[in-house]
Length: 252
Image 1 (spheres, one colour):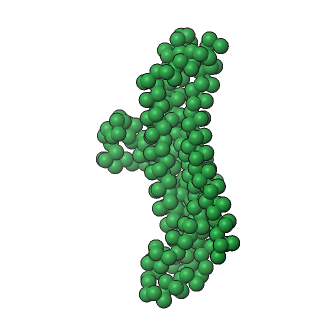
Image 2 (image 1 turned 45 degrees about the vertical axis):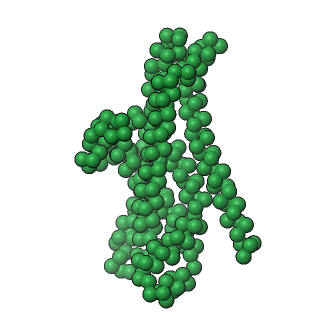
Image 3 (image 1 turned 135 degrees about the vertical axis):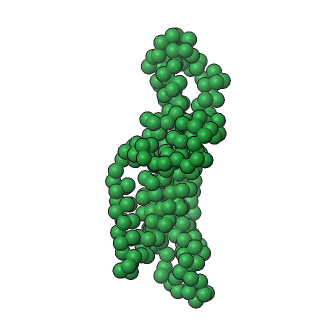
């Protein structure tokens, strides 16, 4: 009991709470950047796979298919390590930013790239499902309005496709947020990495002088609670959107 109270006492330390809060902020930043980039890149992949069917376009289509299948069937951690070793970093991310050291800024850039490459493959398949749900008559409607193929895609097809897959996309966002925990193996900026760092020095804060099992339960319990709150809020949003989607046909 004394050990558990000592572990809880760590959460009264303002510096530790700020350190964890920054980890939460960077987890959200990494997730948002990865989601936005994955949706853009995934949309391009979905369009290529669905509509590049002419003989001269088939090579690009097959490259896209191979890309999607490779990233969907290999572990994220593998691509995180590959990105850390081989992805070049632009000069804009080679110095201190957001209170991070230059090394941490480079890691931030590389991990966002890794998550984007990995998650875009799954998101491409989600968006492709939305594209397949759009009636072919919508293309004819765009042509009748004088739109080019690109304009038809941007203004007519993609908005409808996104509307069909919003709940599924949000579910994938939840997965991406949880996947950021893999970065604890290589980064020092996101939530799980910071919790591990605090745990490694818990003997300095728990008033006991040694790291114990209670420290593990308390610190990782806090991290799990934070992940739960964020993801449960998104889950409620998904359920609401799914319920609204089911009600819409009956209102027509």
